[in-house]
Amino acid sequence: MKKTVLIACFFTAGNLFAQQKLVTQAIVNATTTIVAPDESEDVANIQQSEGPNRVSFRNFSDGETKSVTYLKNDLIKTVLKSEMGRSTIIRDNAAKKTTTLIELMGNKTGFYTTDEEAANMRKRADSMMQASQKNGDSTRRINRNTDVPTEVVYTEETKKIAGYVCKKAYLVSTRLLGIKDSTLVWYTPELKLNNVSNVGGLSGMTAIMGSGGSMAALSKIDGFVMSYQSKMPRNRTMTVEVTKIDLNKEITDKEFDIPKDFDVKPMSEMRGMMQGGPGSGGGQIRMFRSN
Image (cartoon, rainbow, N blue to C red; front, side):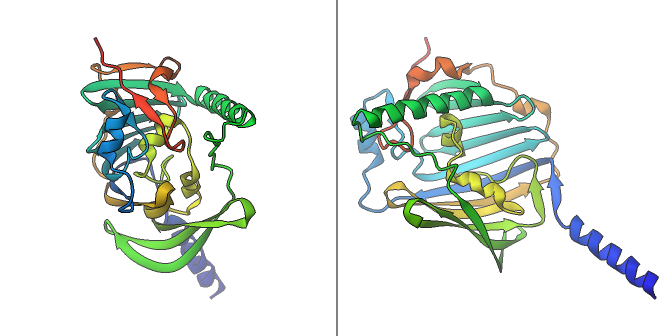
């Protein structure tokens, strides 16, 4: 009898550990929708005021963006499409290198950077902003959210998303003066994607600016994030939801090759096209036409 109980306990424990599957190859489709209040500035008017060769980051990501993420072991590629254009982010975790390709206004440009280079650039940017604040320039404020304490509050509420039974959770972060912010998350405990905690959202702008932001806390969720909703600056709301996950389609290494018709340079040579950023309120990206 004792032997039977022990065997039963062994198989029960084994089933519990086997519930969550680590996925090393997948194709994930998602939709990101950013909604601004009616009183927000019109995107077209902002772009026109910036000139013909500049695009403002201020409302760059508003509206709907479709994304497709390809995962194969240490390689990850995300393609984002919106009315503004198309961007592709290719990440090689083994080489610790990220390549960003941008198709905008007929231009095909791109840049690449290593993790070490990106970290050094962020340090320099922070130092410059700190110097500006000391000199009385209050228009430039540091907005690094990666160190904000965040806890995950799990619930038992469930719903189906893209065929998976998902559980509801909240990311609760505490800012200065004890102010708390929460992000609604739906996740499936069935899956964990290797090196990918979530898709969609501001991953395009995150790759360009090299900062994880507050959404980095999504990696704390015990499963794969299928949907989340969060507040953004200027009273906008961002909703991200996975629409399809394909775990069976074969992905070749060629999928992660850099197209030859893109003018790809080191990030250090692309500083001329980067002005400001999504959190600065007046960030711009200047697009240079190739000869």
